[in-house]
Image (cartoon, rainbow over all chains, first blue to last red; front, side):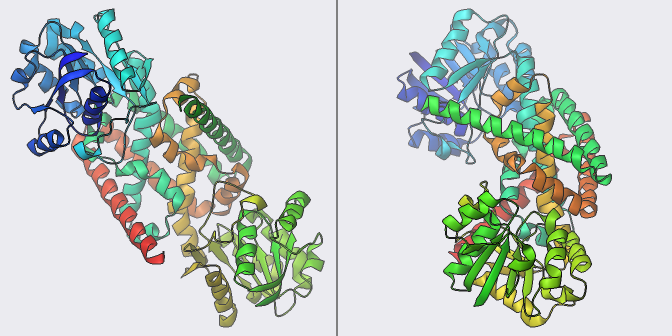
Length: 295
Length: 295
């Protein structure tokens, strides 16, 4: 049980964390901090938080858990504002989609208090945003990746893990570098590719005709291109190096397939399509088994 | 009402056409022809067809409508087999995903009977295949693109259109060239991109770890990579020229975005992401309005 939990960012991710913590009986008092006072007021009305704070320094007074769920680009400024006021027994954690940049920002802002920061990344989302979208069961059965630092005390890491488990999540552990390489490949690159396709089509003179004939395959492929441009700009820049590696590998793959198409090399194309289909079907089957186990 | 309808290929597309025709009271007798005798027997058991034929030449005897719903690569051989036996009053149509190559094959195989061939493309599908997947209402509210030829008689084109309308479909008209350019952009390119991504990931040494962290964004983006390799090999080759144009435009777009990432040019990236998000949300909203109108 935490006596005072401070949540920076009370939207989908932070708001759902607060709701889940409360339902699990893990938080006595929850304080929300954020850029938008309208969101904070709404979060209080919805019972997501008990109180609103405007001054980050005052907010963390007496806190024993601080969750950063604001856009990743704000991490350094938030940590710098709270560092001098952070109680020695408080654990700070976050929900950012990238970890290398967050850890670098934390080292810079927290200095000697870096041991108190246990980085994390819940793999959960919805298309909706803001406090209204927050759900107490958003994290049930979802993965949370904890990327512990060498400086962290083992008991703090386990407390963060246990807190997420109380929210229903399944804990995974990676280094920050491993985390960023993995998500560059399976999340950040697909987002870039989907944004690229839709912008490419939208820029054509006959875009209206093209969109008219787009069907369910296009709908699924481009769903992630409906994501927040600001958030994905930040993720792209935050994970630049790992993402460049993935973009280069993909450009090489696509350039090679372009040659197969130009050469009408049906056998080579079918081999790639079959390898992809096999991997996709295997992955989907494995996910189904995992979901049956959890439910 | 057609007296004798012959359907080549009694899987999802051809089987659903037969079921829809029968339900609409537009077909007296439906004969199925195909490569797999097991599928034909199953289609007959399921009431999709009334009779099975093994010889294409005999099958079209007395037919007044012939639907080609076999893989596109078989079009030329099927038309060559039936051409000498095709009754003068029979209309031939097809359900192929590409039209330029189908029209070229039809001109070659049908020769002087080309006027009897009215090409079409129903924009409908499911993840399942074969006669078991066929549904009488697969085409309800779905688009069917008719790419009429200069040689077609107007009344034959209208009869094909009316037949699809009786199946619940909404008729659109494009030239074969327009059709192929449109679908290269909104369907064939996304399939190539999704196959490329999954094969790229599957080929990495740590593929198992990567797939473990793939979540809902990845699932939607790669759903079309679960499609039939044989079918998509054929479509890729059949629509090679239009597809190469699209692949080249996409490679240029992605190469330019790669440079923005390398330069940490957040403003340029955000502009592309925002343009894509805007177009994607507008498109999704337009689809919703259209679906509400139809239901």
